[in-house]
Length: 358
Ligand code: PBG
Picture 1 (cartoon, rainbow, N blue to C red):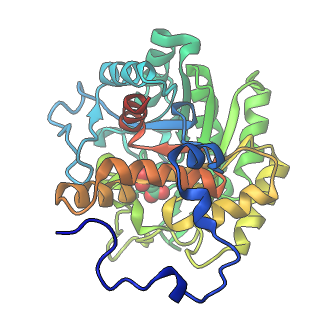
Picture 2: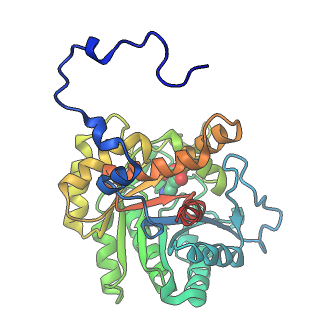
Picture 3: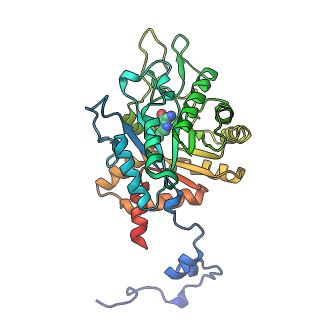
């Protein structure tokens, strides 16, 4: 076989078009591509590692594997400490803790959320005892892992309403209790109105003016949270004939079709004192990340959620996509869209891949 262009290729002279602009010139060499890349690769420092913790004393029979999230596990408190140590070793110094509350401790109100000896509080303390300033610990503020209804707020089961202001009071107690345990940043994921301001006030009143708030600002009522709810056994529980309990979170999380409404949430969170604003889920909502980036001077975070992780894992397991390439590309795209921080179950793995690259 001959080398070179295939036989029959038109001659250069035959190509009559006047091509004035040739963008391909700027892509011709790896050196040039690297030199002019608009978005630098994600750094391990940009990533926040979400971790699930369970109570192995109260619920020793808990499955540690999560079948809808291959490679992600429920950890004991000691297990979280070990996992975070490994993450720190590859440069991921931020984590966010999600407790799987033992069934016996779940109540209608979810009072366990502010138990100073609760699973989240014990995990936060263990992490800060082990690593001090080497780790930055975020927490989840919401009632769904703690209440029997699986909702982020208190449910009035006569009307089926998720109560706003009553819930905010609980969230304030939860946030203060997490701050007492040593949290560096509390992250309300509940989407109740006015909770950022109320939590800010409660933290300040209790001497925690140095504790940050990362607001789940534009959090959508998304089907992509399914695997997360498996992990924590926190899906909304239908109430049956007698009790009206909503089967979804659409009266407090945002409608996936809405864009402008994210600005309304942003304005409220800024006015109420949020330090970081988050968009969630991630990849289907890159436009919303860009919207917040262009409309605030606050850092913007993106949550690459459980369902997005599960999709990548499933496709990779089938050999349909290259996992490493897809994940690193997705992380770059979050950054290009305007995210400063990325919460991802891939954090430790992605940081390790980045280390191999240089
Ligand atoms: C609960 C909460 C959820 C997630 C983070 N905090 C689930 C929900 O709102 O139902 C989802 C994260 C993920 O899917 O990875 N307040």
